[in-house]
Structures are given as C-alpha cells and as structure tokens.
Image (cartoon, rainbow, N blue to C red; front, top):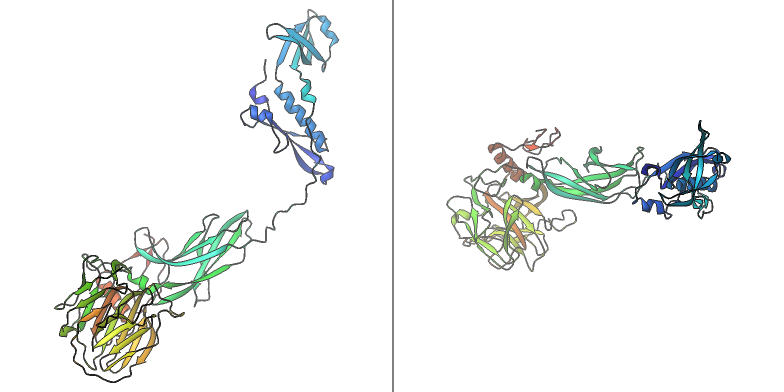
Length: 527
C-alpha cells in the first residue's frame, strides 16, 4: 500500500532552543527559505508542511538533518504486511531486508522492518516500510546564521506625510446640492503599521482647530466640509498627521488655502426663472435700474438686458471670443477681441452729480495691450482695468481716469484668472467706494476738470469707442442710479433668495453656517 498524499510532506519546520541565541526559541526550516524544493515542485507548489518541536535539539544543523530525514521518509510511502516462515525470526525491528515479488516487479527491494509478530502456527508476521538510502544522505547545509539585533523602526517615531496640497473647490451633496469645500491631498508616509491620517482645519482668524475626520493608508485624499458662508475670500489653515496602530502620532504638516466664499455662495441659490440659465444674479428691475446685462444665451450674438424698454446688447465677435460657463450660468469670453454694445438711449444716462452703482462679475485673464474696458457710457461713466489689472474709473463731472489703488494682480488679492465681483458705489459728490467680492478695498475722491459734454454714445461692455478691449470674460453687469449700501450685491442676492423660497443644502452632519450680512443662514440636515 502507498501512503496517502496528505502524509507526503514537502516542507518541514521545527522549533529548537538555541544556546547561541540566548536560549530563545528559534524556527528552523528545511529546505531553507529560498532554496530549491523538488518535492514542492512535484506537488504543483501546493505546500504540505510538517511542524514539530525539538526541545532537546540545540543546534540548527542537527535540526536541519532531522527535518530532512523526516521529509524524505515521508516521500517513501510504500508499506507491506506479509507472513513469512520462522526463518524471519532472525530479523529485528530496524533491520533493512530485501524483498522480491513478481507482481509489483520487486527484486531485492529494500524495506525497513517496522513491526513483527509470531502467529499460532509459528509463522512470522512482518510490517515493512520502503527504505531508500538517499533519504539519509543530507544535502548541503549553510553555516549557522548570526542574526543581528532587530532593526525595526522605533514605534514611537512616526514620519509625517508629505506633499500636502489644498484646493478650494465646489463639491456636491448626495442630493446634488452644491457646497464649498477644501480638497486635501498628500503623499502617505512610507512606513508599515500606519493606521490612519487625521485632518484638522480652521479659519486663519480662529484659534481652535476643528477635527474633520481621518483617512486610511493609500487613500491620500480628504475633503474639509462644510465651509462657512460669508462674503469675501477667507484664509483657511489645514493640517494633517499620521497615526500608527499603537496610537503614536507624527508631527503635524500644515498648509493654507484661500476659499472664495462670495462667488461660491451665488452658486447655491435656487433658480428663480426656470427659462434662464443664470442663477443668483440680482435681476430685479427697480425704477432706477439703467442696465442689467446677463450673458445667458449660450449662443448667437445677443446678450440679454433685463431692464424694460431698453435694447439688448449686440456682440461683435472676435478671434478666440466664445460663450462659456460663468460662476452661476453663462458668460462670454471677450479675449481682447470682442465687444458688446447697446444702442444709445436716454435710459442709459446717469447725468452730472447723480449717485449710481455699478456691479460687474468678471474674470480677468491676462494683461492687455492697453486699458481694458469693462463697461462704459461715453462722457458719463466708465469702469475699466489698466493693462496690468488695476481698477480705473471715470465719472462725468470729473471726466479723467481715476485710480483708487485696487490691483487685481496684487499679492493681497491675486485674482487673475478667477471670477470676481466688483462693486463700484458713487455718491454723486466725487467719492467712490470699491468692493471686491463684498469686501471694501478702497474709498477714492475723484480729481480733474468737469466737462459737461453732452452724452451721445452707446452703452458698451468689454470695449470703448477708442478700441480699448477687455482681456477676459464677463458674466454679469448692472448699473443702477443711487448709491447702494454696503454689500449691496450680497444683500440683493439674499433678497432674491428669500423671495424664491430659498434652498436647503444637505449633509450628513447637523451644523449651521456662520451668518453673513443680511441675517441669512443655511442649515445642514441629516436628510
């Protein structure tokens, strides 16, 4: 009979007590790890391992020899039980005897005598197991390895993550509502046993850090949300650290990001007019409104003017100009080549010593060859940028270009390539206030000679009569008689928002945003 397949092992391990290693338990394997294993190959790489304890063996070579024999013997699995005459009494257990038998084709095949018994008729019963001399010829052994002391890392010294990157962006809840968030990315620390990465954040003006959750190893992405709604750009601090499986923490890695919350807020408003693509821009038409222009058509050469009894704006296209998506619907990229014009009408006139307010949602992309007109009514009023992005303006009673000292390219603003809300408030007596994204940036008193020239020109967006064109995109322009109060754009947006019934922004946590001017708050619900 042959031994079962499960009894034929192809790998053997033993635990010994080695004096050379301070009498600590040591595991010995045969064949050695990494060495060729013909038996394992013969078994199609299916490991069948024998584990034994050798408490009285104290040397690794001796243990290897024992394991080699045990492994080789297991592969010699032929067993025979036979009855012999009393001459077999000369054998004893452990003898190697030859066996010849025609059926299996054996001629003097060697077997171990593993058991004997005397029968009543004086016959001898023998139990034999196949013997192979090669099983006791040990293979090449390596010198005993002198294992060094452990070089495992200090479990209480954790390397911090690297490559922290923070991005201000607009995310969505599961119900499709938009919300501002900070995308946090990093590179994991290259250590074993890291359990998680903790993320904390706060407004730069705050002192207390807030926990914003954690991520497991290999994720390398997290979102800081919610971000409180308030006007203007807000500087946020974000930090991250690694925590290992025993709770030891690395040092914090910190970064900062400016969140453009004012523009983000507009995107959350419910659509007031289902036929319009633009949402959030104030399009009420009070009696003092002169022009309210939105670029929401998305095609063609007409920009809509929402003020009744006034002309829409006709767009003269240019190289590279195109309809685009604005911060809340449509926009038009003028690319320093296009222009939009509404035919002159007395409805556009402001007049001498009359207060007015101009709002413009623009994206200034790059420097231009000359002055960059945003909106202008010749000999009446004009709002523009210098060739390098500084705000300039002109009013009829002081018809000379004025510079209030607000530069979109300055380090303090750094608004090139971003959607910006410019609010220009003129009091009718030479004093102008300029708000950028809802924050007062300059108060300026105009200087220069009065002209009193007759107003006769068209209302122009993106250019003026001298060919000065805007290098960027415009989404919204509004001109209203009268000086509007502080944060007028945001206040109008809130008025429209509440009139439209509001919108609910959903998230898994129950939190309330900070309250912006106007007494409005957005609540997060667990729905």
